[in-house]
Amino acid sequence: MRINIKIKAFRKSLIAVLMLLSMGQIESVFAHSAGGVIDAAGNNASATDLAQVNCYDDGDGPTGYLFIQIQDLSSPVPGLLMSIQAYKDSQMINDSDLVSGDANPSPGAQLWGGDGVYYISASKTAAGARTFSVNYHCMTSASVHTGTDITLLQAQ
Amino acid sequence: MKTLFLKKVLITASFVIGMGYGAIAQSYPSASGIMDATGTNANATDLGKVTCAPSSQYLAAEIQDQSAPVQGLLLSLHIYKGNQMTTATDPVSGDANASPIIAINGGAGDYYISATKTKAGLRSFTVTFQCLTSNFSLSNTSIVGLQLQ
Image (tube, rainbow over all chains, first blue to last red; front, side, top):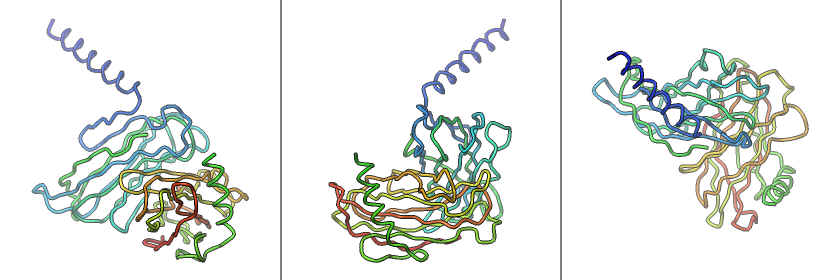
């Protein structure tokens, strides 16, 4: 009986999540990952999602770099690839997921900017709806996870 | 209508070809360069700061990949200012056509533009950019290179 209730509760939660996903843009936050659907209508080649990541010393040490990674969860379409960018001050880096829909994210990239505000963005190379997830982690210079907060600025 | 006008403006601008990142003659700037010269850096990104004069309302830009096509290797341009960002990609490398034109409605001040690519490989490219007033007249445009990779 108790197991049955738990299954029903889980199922209810899952349905709620799927309903949110089907409504297009949502900012789902599991640890330090986020994602959603970009260009839900499939007609905006310029669609770009943008967020601000604040890196700070939460007791594990000051930030050395921000690590970013993106995974395109949609089926492959020729010429349609997803990329993630990180920028801070006068530096920027880019990372692309070259195989859409498989189990592997992009290789990952690091932007060494210390503590402070970074911007991360997700973009794509052509029109088309894409479901994606991103990972972002503020890391110390010794590669220990440190304070990481995110604020969504633009969802397209 | 707006896109057609911007295209006309940028076609005019494209007559002036720049050498590397830098302010180009008068108000019709473009910048050309080579990214990832060794062909080994998939993360290579070029970054510049464009300053639009006080009369400006928009920054419009496009990118053209002038290298031969390589499977899975595409060049993109990003413009961002404040809480806004947009992206354009040249879908066919090496042909006579640039990417679609993109613009940010961010008023006067500093915008950032960047060129990125989807994987390792040398790319020769040109970015054309122009600040515009609210009625799409040209306004003063200058650029400073911040990062060349």
